[in-house]
Amino acid sequence: MRYDTTLKALLEQPPETLLRLLLGERVRVSRMLPTELPLIQGLRPDLILELEDGRIVHIELQAQPDRGFTTRMLRYWERLYVKYERAPVQIVLWVGKGKVAVESGLRARGLHFRYRVLDMKSVDTTLLLRSRLVDENLLGLLGDVRNRRLSVRRVLQRIAALPVENQQKDAIQKLLILSGLRGIEPLVIEESEAMPITVHYDENLFLKRAFEEGEEKGIEKGAEVGELRATREMVLRLMEKRFSKVPSSVRTRVRKADLATLRAMSDKILDAASLDDIL
Image 1 (cartoon, rainbow, N blue to C red):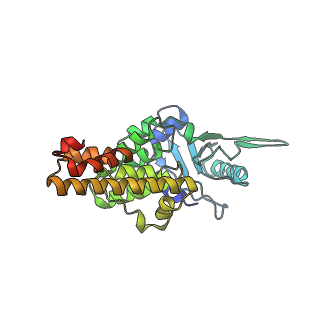
Image 2 (image 1 turned 30 degrees about the vertical axis):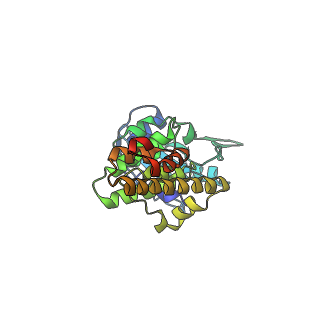
Image 3 (image 1 turned 90 degrees about the vertical axis):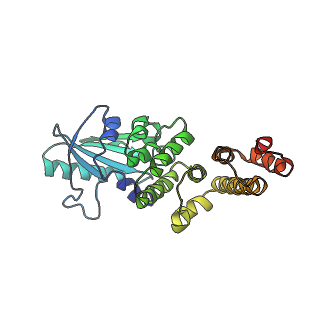
């Protein structure tokens, strides 16, 4: 699955904030457990943790329907129980675009097997978005976000503040990939224009396809963003030619202006006596 690697990369460190949201209580992780389980060839759980109180927590991330998902969860439960001699707490986090498309258990003659399934879109991820960790911020964008534009902007600001360029590039790539789960690739590209970040989405075929090809609606939105970006650059260039120096405050207003406002600005530039006349 194209999102799988990125999602797992966000959980390389103990996700205590995420666990607080999923379990409804503050917990401490004592250790990250290996995901290799005996006798399950070709299958590997997404995340296994041992809490300080001794509980074993198994988290599985799912973004698409899977007919064999429930039986696989049962096999994970059995192997974890055998290995650690404790019944694991199993939580499935649905991160897909649409409605949850996996069952929450299995009922058959003599068997009643259940686990929790949470739709990430319905989870209040404010705690994740407020975290100092960028990876947790990225996960937070998949949740129930009231102001998605503002949240994307704040995450981009944190990415821009990362001390190493490679860290910025890695975080931006994760953000662009995960944005496909919520259809906000154009928004991410648009907001990144006002940040001191270079977005190399052309370097990655998936990122390029997500932004430029997408679904019909995504294509139309992508075209709008492309026109908006080009018009901003044109207005700034015309201002520089007309008035030589353009203060940073004016540049900020241009970068935040919508397409209609930018067009109105461009119509005024040639006849304006000052930048104030344009704004």
